Length: 291
Image 1 (spheres, rainbow, N blue to C red):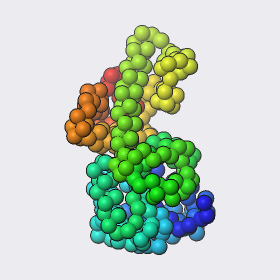
Image 2 (cartoon, helix red, strand yellow):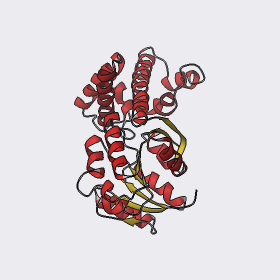
Image 3 (spheres, helix red, strand yellow):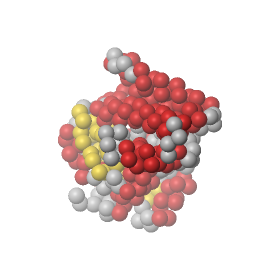
Image 4 (cartoon, rainbow, N blue to C red):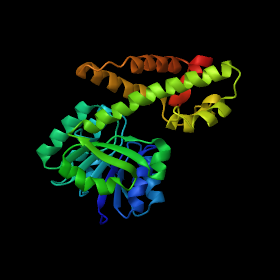
């Protein structure tokens, strides 16, 4: 698509490289971060970009506004809070939220955006920091088809796969499915590696063989070496996974789904936090088996 003016709110480990891809694609990028130093760093790296002191100022005049923040409360603060982006957006603009949040807040903000005459897409992402840096994220979207059709070409700047999954909130619900699946996969892999060690097998050799069969997964391909070496100071933090699982379990209570494995793994992550692993990668589930 033709380059346009875009705003990006939240320059964390995911947002920063995503905003960078937008800039490299030729879009005029306006940025905001709660910690100004990150916005200043972005402008230093991309001199054509501009940094602003509030989300409203950042969103002013942008055709597309993106966000990637921490949770429901953070998202409300940067959209409908004092100085929030919604106050600066023009009719016809589109807000795309990449935060992993609840379906409830997605529906709430979609309605608030519609009242103001602009679109809202909930678009949580999967692929981790590496996926953000490589521009190879999976983007799960919920919202109006017309808004999605306009936003998709811009999202493609950092996406490997992007799909509209349904009405407002459907993107967040799809991300919940993703996190539920990952929780069980990591626990299964942790137990498998723990068993391999106890049985006197060489974990890397076992995985090198098994990844060619039915047990293969992204976690097996990307986390087994570090799990076997008890290295967890990277990746997606346990505290964030617990935040996501709390959202999943809350939604399950509303829709009647039964999630015994997800609930159990959440308890295991609580044990990892007590071990000092709040900021460890989610693959640290193996640590509680070998402590």
